[in-house]
Image 1: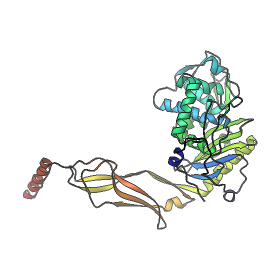
Image 2: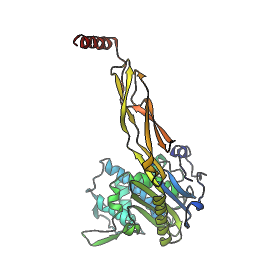
Image 3: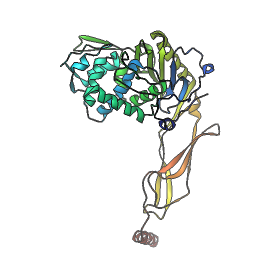
Image 4: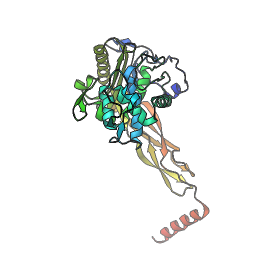
Length: 384
């Protein structure tokens, strides 16, 4: 049994109360999920294949940094920050404990190097440095994190810092499903996988080595990242992402008792997903023309939306698309107006229907335009 979650429904609630949106399905998983909570999501469709306590709010440790990285990458992709920009380390950022690259107050490092420090080595001092560059202070950046969480439908999340350090945190919490949502958002910035798939690197001209905290990067085929974390309060957490045959899976594990169990559980979830499911994708686009009555144009171009559907392994190749266009529409026609239906069938059964829409607006033709059209038609006929 598969579980499809509606982000729209989740967004209706802005509390941290757990939502009864999941059922445990141990009979579908041929291995033990030894963790407080877990989720397996397919990225393109957003469909959840497996869930255990997926809405339970728990400490995420350094998996928090997925949101830190997301906000920073949004600034980079918006052109507000260049990766070769030199960023100066503050006294506060340099004071961070836990995982770090021992940045010194006043030291400068490029945004790209700091990104590598956060993604590969989970450096808290580098994470705070990036946050301060974006918002001026960690406090201001945390406000942005919580606002972005709300936009993504992360209703069981509340951040108190940018690192996941939880010695003094009171309500620094998120859920496995919410981690999957922000992982999905981060992976939409394709540059991130350039760094999240690095096993070993260095900074300071090779003087300081970086080793990825995500051990799956070493051996898991198709791995794309993404982030690990652990504290005594959070246990061992992870968002592990991998892509094979066009299907991108996100396996989130929270509160595992050991690092090895966390890694093994994430691997088993990914293996199970790739073995049992395949992705059908249609890019959408032009699919024909529909006659327009009384329009400045005689036809309007019809387009279908992009479609992603998760199916049992191998069935994606048997899906058939059927386009049903209206015989005609009357002007005016608005861009995006429904002018037909796209149906996706498997073995004769309709899996999904999507609207076929007008690509552009077609205005109603005026008297003068109609007259010119009639005269033109008459001229063409007389010339035969």
